[in-house]
Image (cartoon, rainbow, N blue to C red; front, side, top):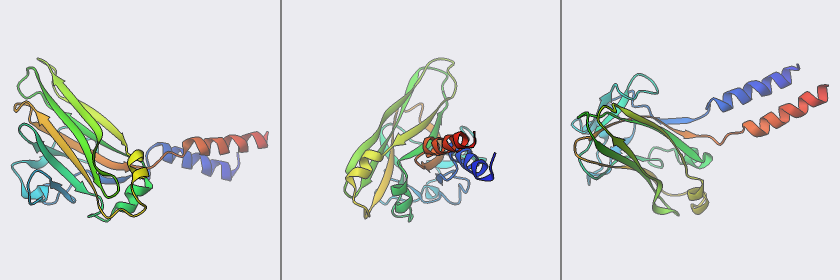
Length: 211
């Protein structure tokens, strides 16, 4: 097998494993720094590290690094938010088509109940709209902690935006039964569009030529 083909196959493997993603939410610096995340529900939009009663370093639902973000909110609230443009990541956002994140919600009272999470995008050219419908964690007696990995495709929003939107913000809204009011977020990253199929096709052509 040629060195060129080996290099291509290695690149394919790295691409399919998610290398190249832009991580903007592993919250390893909590509680001193929330890495640019802020609270949308407060009119002053304070950084999450300034609200220790609502946001803290967590040990549940860790999927990247050594800790997650613990968020405590009662009832319905527009809460956790991140300004893509404010953090200088607009070009990264435009260069990708999806983002991923993980949520874990413990069954705090070992009984029935629910916890909802959804995502809104506020961006110039797109407006203010839901890009991930509410996902409900539904509890029953003995269900324990429920976890979910989310992949959100925002390619439709990219088509509506201009090439250089002045502002881009993501807002996570939560809604719960006031008992299951604690959730753990982790591993938020912009995900590059996969190039695996095209590269495998090229690799296949090289293989056939070497027969």
